[in-house]
Image (cartoon, rainbow, N blue to C red; front, side):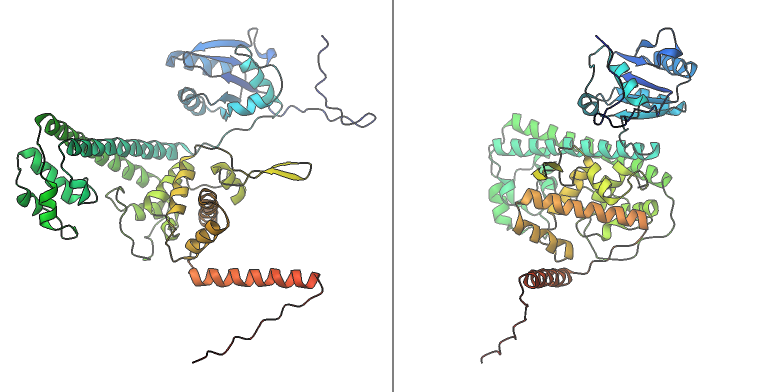
Length: 456
């Protein structure tokens, strides 16, 4: 079979556009759990495709071989977490390493098999047909790992809370029906007293916080149960697990605080703004000030974004937005922009792409929290809900939050909320302007009606 000409013919008689080599010193790596296949240009070695086991000594030999082959750019697939050790090693050795989305490689037609994966990646990279995924700076990656570890600890701690509730239900102790949270101050005092042997409901009811609306008699009535030994044992172990993870959370918070201090590049403290209550699961240290010294702006001034949301976004992206040419590129990376499936001039779908992005998830939660906000963003979210279903409105509002964060980090300007009334007035002016334009096209003129006099 004749080899296909790499040039692309536009039309008969027209000039041809040839593919140009943009990365002549590129290598391709097919990542695996036990070994990695590496391909270099055929003229660099008698054996241009080699297999290296995933042990550290073999990864070092892989890097040495690439240096000997005069390679400066390396492309690899993002396979699970197996790529991380090799990526970090090659980056520390001075290579330009690009992490390639495996779907992008498959979408380019050509030979695709397990043996030839690395050769295909190397060939596509040589002609500049692949782009690397975004990966923040190394220090930001450390912060990201710590914050994700903290999120995992919180999820594990919530499972122990569920175990507490299950043990109480099995003993027919209806404490959850009179207080909102068994993991709160009142709930924890009562549960620890129960494990210690206290059974008098009125004695336990005196431990309630003044903010608990239920009366002492209601709490005492809810604490009447069968007190089976096996369920009390399960409750005790759930409390022990809850306390152990609380200790791990405190250690993780200390590591996060130290890493934030290493990333500080600005001086001063954020200006006093709205008094907001501390988020329930937020770290115990002054996270708002630490974020300000890292970013140079106070992201929590944006309505709906608290310190945990701001840190969730910054830990995924860092503060350097130079990788994203515009706010639209940033929103696209987050997976919050509308889809652009258009064919024949017809929009086939505007659905956003599926993207498991931690920063986007945090922004969606922040957008949903604007439901009752009396701010301009709250008014925007409610208007979006009136025009579309709630999931789409949440995505649209999260998109707006992402643009605000991008603008603050790139321009260094503080966000000022104009209020709900300002937004509504701007919306009214925009609607009137559009109506006036439509009336003009139809040969008419829009005239404002005089306000009727109030009849007493």
